[in-house]
Length: 423
Image (cartoon, rainbow, N blue to C red; front, side, top):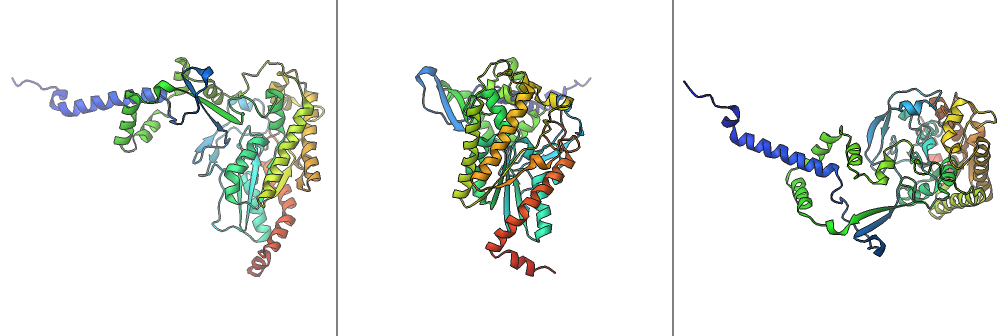
């Protein structure tokens, strides 16, 4: 009787190769999801108080990851504080420079406009074609018969100092003609929770600090990892795609290997560390710093030949708030013993500062706070726009920008050329 040969014996070489490959994949996966070795080779100066740890510090460029594409759906928890938001997927696409698409639609635009701000400029839960920075460009193009590129630099949580850093690093290279900035809420919230723009928050600080162990700069396993990535084309890309569905943060947190920066960046309440800490409500100092930050924005723009524009920030903070408004601000109310009445008072103070700076420095001021009704018809919570609200915001901005852009075009001999090109 003929001896039956096991399938693994028939394909010994293939089996051996597959086994080694799978084991190697497991080893590399473990290395990838655990921060055993620093991925960033840049190490800062050694601090004698840190022992063997080295610190690397760099300014925070608070932006969306360039090239990011995904469909974002508001969570069940988020929906509890809304009343006119549809829980479905909203497309978010980021261009190579970290701006929300649609962005650079024309190769040779007549006018370039950049919109800067936080989540109310980002308008995440609005369809791409209905986000007001894009609508403004489309509507102005129809009115003036020109080509306009608008860039949406809004990012949830950004305050005016984040936008100033973004202005210097990623907006100026675009050589925009106009930069529109809308800030107040995040500046106020940052001050009330962190006391200053200069803080150690893992998500809102202006400086990021990373620590590395000086002993682990070069190791056998790290060299093996680098060799694997260099030897097998696209190995890291394939591995990353294969582990996208794995909750690596949960694994690292279980092992105690996830640092506080990573922990805070992956939860909904970024201020959970600050909750319950009593801070001095130095509102007078907060107001001065906010004004200085707005003036910094204006001076930077003018130094680079850009027309700055300031906008107030609409909200639903009425004298008699409804359930949704109270739920939106309750976390702030429960921290630092801030009452709803104080939040409303401080919010009006900060919006007033925007108007004062615009008047004092002779900057175009668009008062969205007065133009947008404090209603769920336009905002699905205390300050974020739904589709209808975004459309109304766009119309208000278009009306305010039409004359300044016509003046800009006439000064650059563009409007006459475009008028003559009409059919």
